[in-house]
Image (cartoon, rainbow, N blue to C red; front, side, top):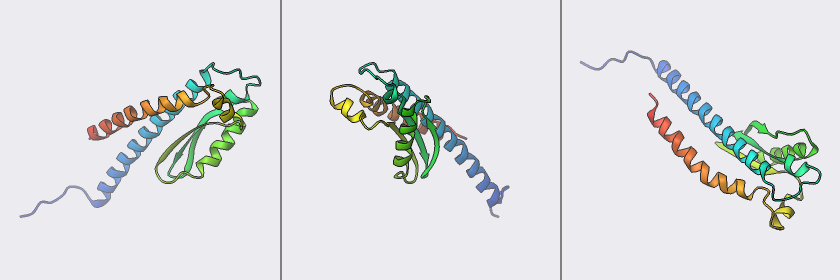
Length: 147
């Protein structure tokens, strides 16, 4: 007398795919929220005088999933936003498998502004370093609790 399953291998695969899709979507939503938080934080800094508005406008993110750009967030229509998005797209081509969240300040003088002691992205990077481990732990707990 053996054990007889009440489901087929195809049923099992479908259930695994549904769970994968739920997990994937949850990860994407959390990374998008984190990206928006980081961008909004960096854009809200008042440590430098942004004379043209282009530096602040060039701050945004791109989310890459398995090497494919999934979404952008550049909440401005100024020239800087297009420059930031172009830089983000260039950097996204280096992303491999998995998830990548790239936050940029796209103007070529952003590093020079940072080197003068002003905060363009530094505090956003520190915020990411503290928030990402919390996000990861929260997501792993949710995945373990899935039924």
